[in-house]
Length: 327
Ligand SMILES: NC(=O)c1ccc[n+]([C@@H]2O[C@H](COP(=O)([O-])OP(=O)(O)OC[C@H]3O[C@@H](n4cnc5c(N)ncnc54)[C@H](OP(=O)(O)O)[C@@H]3O)[C@@H](O)[C@H]2O)c1
Image (cartoon, rainbow, N blue to C red; front, side):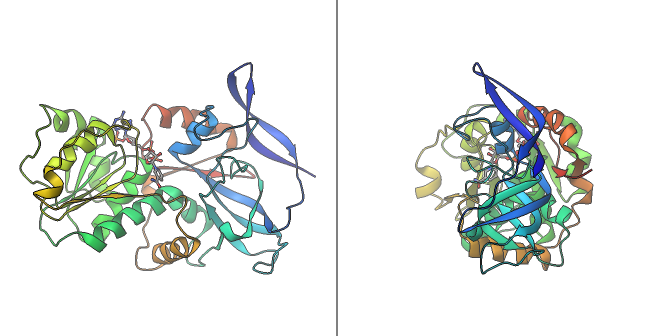
C-alpha cells in the first residue's frame, strides 16, 4: 500500500521537497501505525524541511514533529485499531518520519490518547508549540513570586508566543507582547496582550547589568540579544522560561539578575518531556486551559506547505499552521 507525504530529498547537497507516494511498511515490534489526519508546522519542521542536519541527519525524510490520527495497526496492548491519538516530539519529525506523511510508525510509548474534548484540528492547533507554551507557564507558576507586573512574551506572534500570550491572559496575567512585526499590535491585543512592545524599541541602547524591573516573569521564544536584555528587567524572584533560539544561541549576561534579584532562568524541552507530563498538559488544554485557537490558525494542505515553511523561516508567520491530510 502507498501513502502520500511531503517528502524532502537531498540531491548533490541541495534540498527539495515534493508530494510523493511512499511504500507503507508494517510497524516493527513496540511500534504502532497511525493514519495521520492532521499535523502542524513548527519552527523545527521548517529546519528539517530545509536540510538542517542539526535536526535531521539523513535524507530523504518526511518531517512533522506533531501528529493527530487514528491507530491503523495497534501492534501493542495499549491501543486498539480506531483509537484517536496524538504524538508530539521525541524523535518524530527529526529522524523518525513524521506527521507530514499520511501514515507514521512510532513507538507505542510516544503516543497519547486524544482527549475527547479536543478535535484533531484543535489538538494540532496546540501541538508542540502549545505544549512548549504550557511547559513555560507551568515553570513560571511553580517558582515565581506573586507580582502585579506584567509577564513578557517574546516572539509573541509566533506559534509558541501566541499560545503563551493566550494562556497567560486566560490565567488573568497582564501580558506584554514583544514582537518584531509593527503591523501585529491589533492581532496581539485581540488574543489577550495588554501591551505591545516592538523588538527594535526593546533592544535600543546597550544592555546594562541590571535595569529597572518591568516584568514579573517572561516566556522567551527567541534567545540571543532579546533574552540578554530581558534578564535585566525581571523583578525579584521572577522566572524566565527559555524555550527558543530564532534570534540566536548566545546569551550575554552578568550574575546580577541571579544574585541580586534571585531570578531563575528555566530551560524548557517539551519534545523530550515525559509522556505523563504530556498527558497532564493535554488534559489541561482539554479542560481548564481550553482555548479558542480559531483566530490564530491557518489550515493548509501538503500542496500549500512549502509557502508556509518559507514564511516561518523568514520569521514571518503569525499564529499556527495546521496541516490537514486527505483534502
Ligand atoms: N524548547 C522547546 O521545547 C521548544 C519547543 C518548540 C519550539 N521551540 C523553539 O521556539 C522557537 C519558536 O518556535 P515557533 O514554532 O513558535 O516558531 P515561529 O512560529 O516561527 O515563532 C517565532 C517568532 O519569533 C520571532 N522572530 C523571528 N525571527 C526573529 C529574530 N531574528 N529575532 C527575534 N525574534 C524573531 C517572530 O515573532 P515576532 O515577529 O512576533 O517577534 C516569530 O514569529 C524556535 O526557536 C523553536 O525551535 C522550542
